[in-house]
Amino acid sequence: MKHIITSVFALLVIMNAKAQKKTEEKTQVVLSDEEIKPLLLKNACIGCHKKDKKLVGPAFKEIAKRNYSNERILELIYKPEPKNWPEYKTPMAPLSFVTKEDGLKLAAWINSLK
Ligand code: HEC
Image (cartoon, rainbow, N blue to C red; front, top):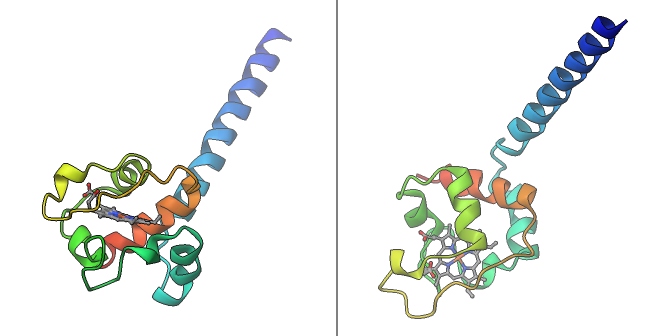
């Protein structure tokens, strides 16, 4: 009996890990420019960034050249490091309201621009 419980538990853990991996993979799918627009708008990125032109912040194409991982970009959205861009006078505000899912979609899209 104990064995059965242990195996069922192990199975559940494995299934859960698999399901989690799936959602992670899903958020890495790169959205098209049209699909990303509402997210850029909703999360206020558009006020300071353009795809290929400098605005208040660097062009997303320039950011893509830094070769950050998607996770690192998510981290930088939550905790910007203005020292990485000394030539920009207004620093980026920490955007804690961006959901992890949105953040990773934005990151994957930014990284697709290089
Ligand atoms: C208030 C203006 C502003 C908003 C809003 C804003 N940014 Fe920024 N962003 C900047 C500036 C300025 C920089 C460069 C200086 C810095 O990092 O502080 C920057 C830098 C970045 C970087 C590079 C970070 C690094 O350290 O290399 C990423 C990635 C980024 N922004 C993504 C986003 C995303 C995604 C959004 C929307 C969720 C967003 N930004 C919203 C102004 C903004």
